[in-house]
Length: 146
Image (cartoon, rainbow, N blue to C red; front, side, top):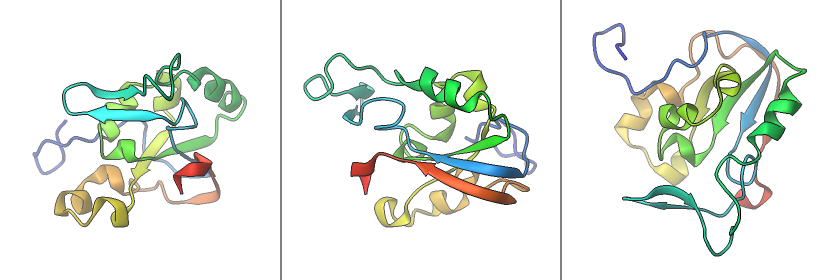
């Protein structure tokens, strides 16, 4: 996608920048699927065959959709290591359109991921213009993730 400077951006504009009365910071592991997720450079992200046998990625997304459905004003922020790997845009592409349209940005933890200059300038780690006017925020995270 082209940025205004003419450079390509890895950022997926999933929704129109907007303010939100309520923002839900959403983790994925342990929230929309079992927490035992693994990553391999060739295989990508997958469920642990030993600790999460019988589970699949995003298996609980329909529950999240049904909980959010009566609350259309709730915006989402991806608060997960998925912002780094596989990346914000790649992660949103794996979610249904009904959820993608709610996302207004993503987060990451500098103490975990370091101070990589790309992370500092990548727009998926900063709220988009107009997205910071929240009245209420809440977070759904895996309790064992710290």
